[in-house]
Length: 527
Figure 1 (tube, one colour):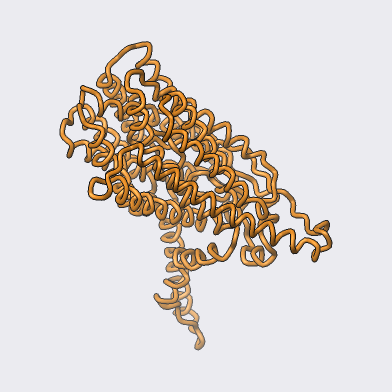
Figure 2: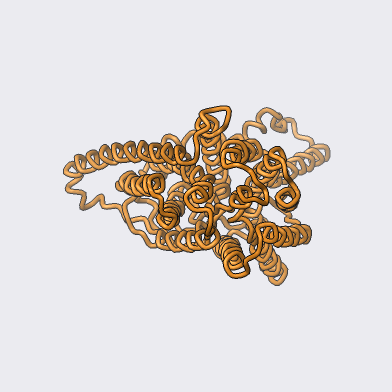
């Protein structure tokens, strides 16, 4: 997502502003990469590449968006769980619930950090190729695999593809200058959203009207992901990245400057020539170390702390529901499968709610906890309905609304976190939040879902998720009460608040956060 910080001052104190003299004005909506659009190229770097070669970068962006669209088309994805539980594969619901699906979360947790680092170190393209290879392996296993171990390997490769999606999210920003970040973010993320929506619709039409088998649908998906792999091989190779390559170039310039100075000293020796900085000093002053030290300031700011915690805890519950909702649908109704249509509807509603969030005007430093609490309470109610109902259509509608509520808060959370951070620090904070959420998901699955733990069936799991969201709701309401009482208690001391009224924060409509990540069992969610 990209959003202009038109009135972000309403969420930060004067002290916080002094701590951040350079406040980025925009962000990318991906959970792993937020990029500032306010940081233009340095004057010393000369004219941007977009001015020198406008046609080249435009075609590169168009090709990358086409790749994002085509790589998202997997018509069989919403029907993987029914496929595994059908007579074609003949796995039991217990095997799929307690032995196959948990591997996805474990794999994602292990691969996430290496994928995040390798994406920047290798400059995106190799990681996208790895993602394409993993996609092909997934569908080959689905078509040819017959054993439990093979399906677990399939989930392992799904974890790799999920972790590698950060490469696409950040790749496009290496092709253009910062002044174009907002525009190209909308293009790239919209292309993925359109691909996910098209994939779900095509899959449902094939099942409902074409009356084809799950195997044939998966074979069609294999063709699309194979084409996506070929496209990834044709992607242009970026010249820069966010962390490592920029740091390496900076070090090269420093070494060149030292070498030049040494040559000048030989020609004109001076008795007081300063020694070059030692390695330890340069290490302490490096960009990465400084950002790691700066992360400590995030927990000291109430607004950043709140939305980071929301990102960790609520996204954990959100993805747990997405991982297992198809198994719940299969238990409620396994004769008529409308997974593709429901996923298409939920993707569309998620796009709409994310768009609406861009126009919300509210004093988030006062009302954040209450808004989060109300939406979390609504999500808890929908989970209770899914747990108690025997109507498949009630399950479908509850799921669509559940996703829509979550996606409404995602662009707001992204804006609140990213609006006061540099793009490098923002990417690091989102990466840490995502990793902590993945660890929490793994712990919950290991305790309640995995066969080595309590091995709950899918209905009992949704009861656990309802209790989880209920506890979060209670905590948010308590925090909201504390904040509101403190706010109105201090208001008379500030002259009724007439002079301290903060400008409402307005998010601008963007397409980035409406993107739905596609999961191994056909669920689509925004990471």
